[in-house]
Figure 1 (cartoon, rainbow, N blue to C red):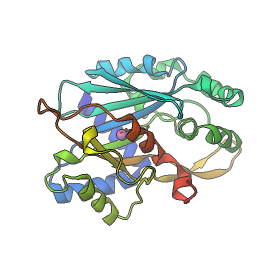
Figure 2: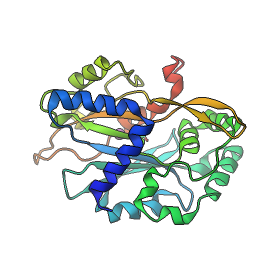
Figure 3: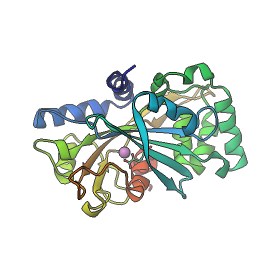
Length: 272
Ligand code: OOG
Ligand code: NI
């Protein structure tokens, strides 16, 4: 599978879970002619065989290489940014949850889930849209994870998907500032992630970002109940050129820390 096919398939899976992305994408296409994807993000647990180090060779196979590492102490996450020689291809942000830092009960749940993974399924890049590779957890287990790590609950319930795609605002013909991009999203009537303010970062960071709040889906849990949970969101990134004239190709940990909150459904309920 080449990188283009990879991102086409990834987008299909992502928009199934995230109908807002298709609608917002179309609105931007209509106004700007074409829309480029700045980056996609993936989430995983730092437990073999699904940890970042085990899965990233699949990214090497697509032509990506490691760029820079990021740490999120409070969220108990570690991440890498990846770049490709073909500048037309999106960047990749791949994070993993440091499971040992969670409570024993949370660790036990996650170990059980990961124990169900069939390693055969981790051999092709299709794993990145393979969804849950373990049985549904109970609503009670979901709640336990949610109390400690919203990321853990999201990943346990949904499994592997692109967590988001990102419109490269700096490449847009018309809506080429984060403010203009935000106004298009508001016209589509999708709520934005307001954690840390609508706009994350400053031009001095070479990257300013905004994101929607994740869509919601009715998800069946192991005990037979169905509950609304957050799926995925859409992001908007405006990059600035560095001294050499090239666009900044990294991420900004302080921004990312707030972007992660886009899947936090308590924000939607005005409780965050
Ligand atoms: C990733 C959040 C960070 C960025 O652009 O800084 C991020 C996630 O929610 O998994 O995407
Ligand atoms: Ni992002």
